[in-house]
Image (tube, rainbow, N blue to C red; front, side, top):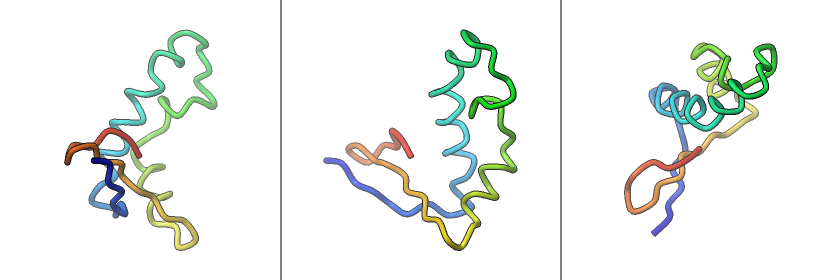
Length: 68
């Protein structure tokens, strides 16, 4: 079963780590250090989650986080 839960600032580290895993290979392959999500600091993830005009969600599959 797939479930979406709204992310909060306390979920920033989890979302950040998933982002790194998802984009790391592309960063290594293309060396796009200026624009790759794999090269962003954790503070940027925290700032995005904190924006009032945005909502971030964590995708759960059978209770385990698999995306965001």
